[in-house]
Length: 452
Image 1 (cartoon, one colour):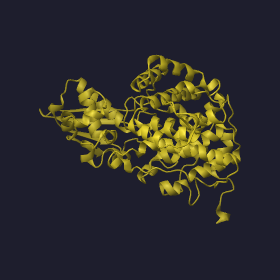
Image 2 (image 1 turned 120 degrees about the vertical axis):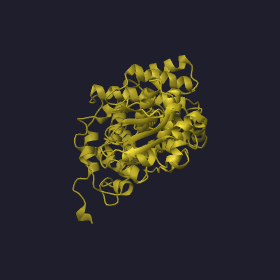
Image 3 (image 1 turned 30 degrees about the vertical axis):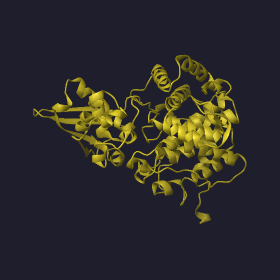
Image 4 (image 1 turned 180 degrees about the vertical axis):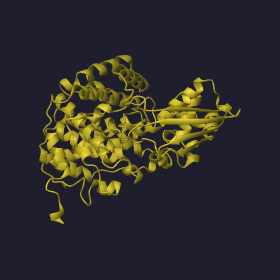
């Protein structure tokens, strides 16, 4: 078996390229995207800080230490802070998305790198490099065997997040190539996250980003001290893709081929609605229907063309997606989300008790479009038959907030302001936080102003 191992493993190629990246080497566009990520993630942590799942995550942590839990007075160890902050940032499903994955990078990588640098290496330049590297690794891993991890019943953000966090923390700590290989190898055994939360809207998806962030920190710190991980963690016969995608065959060149010279991080999408990403173009279509003066009561039936790869998470069982069990499961139910967007103009958890919304959702069905470009592009489609016999149709060709219609910096800061206001911060607190974040990558990582 030893003779079959590669002379140079995928992780070794990747680690060499990561180790070669030094502060100041990032393209301006990539650095700017990482600035946007920082603003967005902090705002998301604040907006969720009073939610029950965040309180449970914080109260369930017994590892007090010096690191900031954003929006809270209590401090934890680096791994503990990363866990709670990652859970908070991902909890409302309002965080960024990489359209090729789909994976959510910011909620994993930003908490992991910030906590690590606050505790171990408070140089903002290294934090910037670490966030860029971690985000890039997480996103590129989702391209190796597209859709397979989701189909196998796992959450790609959770699985690839631990690997991305290990890489990002490793870069932020200045680990050498051998140590980064070990960190990746260790993280492979710390990766986890099943998608059974879909059954009843349980809270576990919310913690996947935090757990991945914590795992990446632990893997990198262990590697720094000489703990050895398998160098064939990706392509090995018992490696990451064998375990979570049921194959060792994949496009590993998508991970390492042009790493460091082309940055997929630049294409990250920021969501316009706090719900499942692939549902959002359908909400846009529904809102345009309503804007044309059509009323829910005018509709006899709705048929949506959908991507096959989204059906098991967002469309089935259809009855559950038409009438979600609770507000969280509603975030991953396109028939309900479409109807809520039609009636109320946006997603709202409270509408799960709105009979007008539920009546419309019960009329929504789907058909698989074999030519749908998912996961490379997220589209929406609605074809409605009206009670007067007319048939009307609408399409959304891409995800707003994504590569084809990105948010501006002002859009990102406006979203931040609304999020921190929802989380109970004053306008002065929000403005002080934005001022801190504007210079964080260029100075010392000091997060005291984010505690409250």
